Length: 165
Image (cartoon, rainbow, N blue to C red; front, side, top):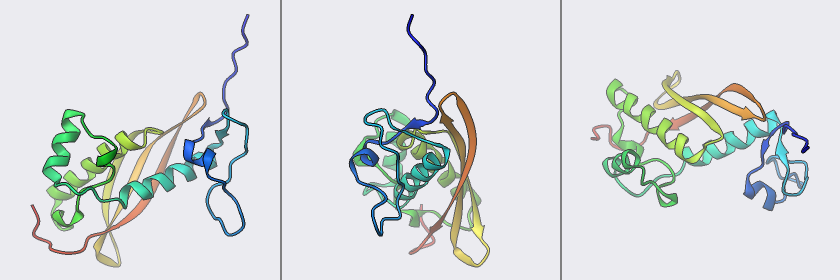
């Protein structure tokens, strides 16, 4: 009879397996090498997801918000659609546009960072800067057989025209 073993972590991303981590001057995540079966512990998984979310939220897609929204609804987003559309179409002082942006960010995270289950995004203004919103991203990590709630926060700067679509 086969023995069932439960992983005590989450699978390591392919790039983290291929890129040497933890070398002198390298502040990125260091993982324990276990061949193709290596796993992140909770702290490592959170660090990896935070790094990926930072890249995702700071990448701009060269198509309009309307086109991106249509692709999201139809389920046809691909790697060419990685990231967010131009943020200048969102006014930081318009609640309906802020809510639309939060929904769009959550949908984008669900597509491109599946290790964060049930992503929810809340945008709030940063106290000291009117052109900066902080994206508070909450979701669930699946760590082996355990689900752990987590929250990440990322500042998002809005530059350019404030009278977008």
